[in-house]
Length: 601
Image (cartoon, rainbow, N blue to C red; front, side, top):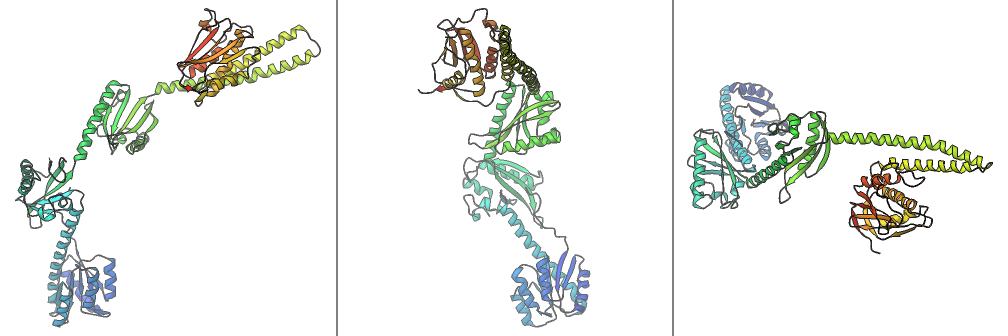
């Protein structure tokens, strides 16, 4: 918004380019001109060609040329200058007394024609003519510049005098009905109410604003109106300031800006802020922040603020750079800008010894336009500690697995080899006992390794076909006379590798406890599946300890099979419970499974 007068600096020196035909004349003319007016600075050129080169390379306010020069005449120089600089003052300063020369010069657009007769007395006259010509030239430039600026402003611009008469409108205003420009310029504000553009109360408010700025009661007056142009129902913001002509005549310079969309956006923002303030009230353990296009906070709330020694008021109008250390602020600013461009991000930061998980995202209106940015912060310090503890435990399990695999398995391999050698010479019954013990140790090692791995994080989930997976596992089991019946084509989401481990323990366990000719059935539940057999089933006393590590009712069992199953089930977020099958045998039901569908037969 412009305030005061739109004027050039009229005090700057007047730069003169002097075309002269005699070195002696130049040495006389320049000091006399500069002495006549201290604002003058004179650059000399002894030929017309040199003068045109300087004029093309530098800015000058006036050209003073003699008539006769080594490479042409002053009229020829004038013709060349006018081709590129039609408004630049050009003074022909010549001893040529011909009326014909003077007449031709005027017809070609010379600004002034001054004869060199009269000795040194003509230099003050020349200086006066130059001063007047440049003043007129600069005034025209100023008007052109002002009009160019006002015409190209994106706001509507207009000028009102003390009688509320419209003296100027730029293209923005002129484009509104009832244009064209002639129907605005020259009319008073009353004309706008008479034609229905503005209501009479709105016209009165504008008159009051004009009076206040012209009387000096206010530097800037703002008001809002709802005119019938350019479109009914839209809100325009008017601003008035005082401006003056060089004569001292005062005017009101007004601008018009359509703020309808801005008001609608502000209304939506108020609604959004109210919604998130409610969210903060109901979720005090998180931090909620809204920020504008300048990254300034427009809302901040949540219990996290007090934890870092800040209040909601500390955030008002501030940016991340005003509140946080440089590295944290720079990262926040990067993600805030991305949110305002439509991209969501989740990242973590450490501040004052705590870990925070932050999600940034855009907030859109009903039309999908981004109206503000949102950041939600949560203290995950305890979660990070838990993750670190789990990582430490996993590392311990990995170390344990390596010890079991290497330090125990290698001696067992040696013992098994030596046992085989000894049996070649002696077939004693004690060797069978030793072999069973070694086999049990080998089974124990395998189960311990599987138990350690069952505590690791799950891999990628995929769709698992219950019938296919069960069939694959059954082919690896020493089933003997046992029989498998799969009663469902259920499909669900799981870690395929871990599910194979689960079956690899459930199926052998059913054979081991159900007997050599047991029938094992697998079928679907509403939210999972079951594995049952027609063996002796569970004792009531057994079910409480069923999934404990090392618990087994079978001779030679390691007691880790169902413990492994329980860990895999828990890792998937499922549940497992023991019950009795319809045949009186054991039945394990696994629920909470993300069931996809049953595959068609």
